[in-house]
Length: 171
Image (cartoon, rainbow, N blue to C red; front, top):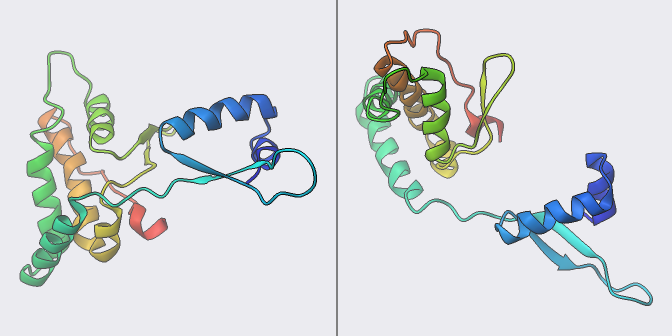
């Protein structure tokens, strides 16, 4: 999109959008290229989301998830249990620590870009293993659910109501 298009979509002034796009460019989140020249003057920039290379661990995760799916009678349950064990090691409870904060912080460290919503849900804006999750969502997405449950359990919070809307099936 061009700068004016982004500004219109965002409902912001072009100067504000320009500074944000420059910051996103320097962090590698967007790319820009010159638009085809039309007339005099310098061509405008066209902006697009940067294509992130898959995690080097995504292929390994995919192979392991495929093996779990092949060997397990219940791949989803196996994924949850593996995730619970992993989650129990994350977000270690400290005196007075908040379980919800531990979940959000741990998910951020793992690359999920979580957003704590007003309705008490947590939106995951990224999936660090998206390519593997698309291939084996019954295992990978349930490992992620298990991580949340493991963190909650380590804080003595009942994780029974925890659920996940698989990012890989939506995006």
